[in-house]
Image (cartoon, rainbow, N blue to C red; front, side, top):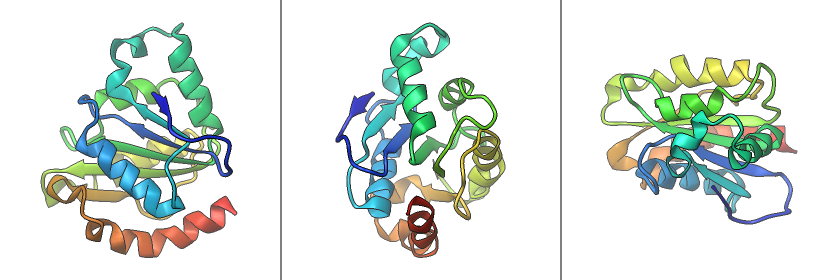
Length: 170
């Protein structure tokens, strides 16, 4: 977990559930975040760097990350697609939140190897994030792994969703 910038409003966070640290999923989430708000997030939670501490419900750093995510105005939640859903690592982190504890705009992003799992974020992440209180603006985003760093892969989604996100954050 790392604080990237601080103090500015709205408060934004990126949470990445890839088991590999500094992954393409992280790169994709940061690209999406920058496109949405024009700056780096206030906090990046790369869950691969947290690892087994997610099993320790007394871990103070994990508890602080949960508190900051819960209070954020915007959270980009990103995961690679594993077995047509998000990773167990992300599930371990999201299990820390009770129903209604997320309070801001929550943008689900999943990366996958092919178009066969395009609906994975819609069927997996959206219901969970909504249950936890996140306001999901329109449809979630699914990006092919090989296009994770191509702004064109995000353009259509951004054209539809950026105005909604901006309105919700205003």
